[in-house]
Every structure is written in C-alpha cells, then in structure tokens.
Image (cartoon, rainbow, N blue to C red; front, side, top):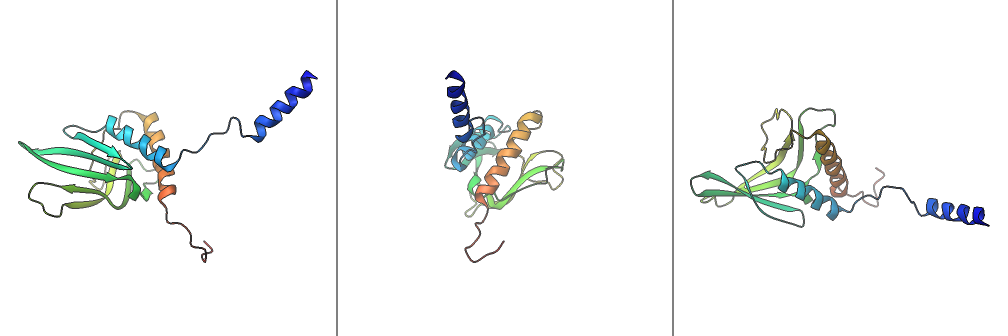
Length: 158
C-alpha cells in the first residue's frame, strides 16, 4: 500500500511540474533588473526612483546642476551577441535624459552593461567585477527582450 501511495504521489509531482523552473513574469523580470541597476548605479549618479519598468537617476554635471535620466525597460528590444565581450542592451528611446535649460532632452537607444564599450555608449552601471551576476543579468535582459518583442500578427506565418 505504501509503494502504491508513493508511486501516485511521485506521478502527481511530475504531472504538476515539480522541479521545473517557472519563468518569471515581465513585471518580476523588470523589478529584478531594476533592483540590480539600483545596487550597481555608478557614481556620481544618484538613484531617484523605480516603478513599472522606469528607472530614474540623476547625475551632477557641474556644481549643483543635475541631469535626470529615465531608463524605460519596457522599450528594451535587443541585447548584444552573447559571445561579444561588449555587453550592451538597446531599444528605441531606451533612455531619455533632461538637463536644466534643455527643453526637449536627449534620447539614447543603447546602454553599455559591461565590457570594452567599443561604441562609447552610456555606462550608468558598474557590473564589471561580478561575472556570475553578469550572466544572470544577461539572462534577465534576454527574458525581458522576449516579453517586449513585437507580437506576431494573426495573418503572419513567421
């Protein structure tokens, strides 16, 4: 009787997916990335807020003058090749920065995350010293990129 009960219990665990890794939701993914961005925000930048995928920080450009930048994780649509030493993410207007006296601000499509930064992208975060964390962040950005990808239309084959 105990063997039958054990077999039934084991089968139910397999059917329910016990032991399978659950994919985090888009919000969970953005929140985790946002928390790591806050932890690794490079000086002299200062964290302002994070909510719904919008990460806001400021940077002093000259004495008492601060520019504010907003990274919109909802707009992330791409990531550098996994074999590239230059790790960056991109999306249309991924970051918007506004400085005093600048009525419209400046838009940026790329952010360098780690590596040599060959194309001189903005480098607001300091992730360079932790390879395990970089792997986890790459995985999270890849997951977010999948969530943010354009959805296939009902009349599209691919």
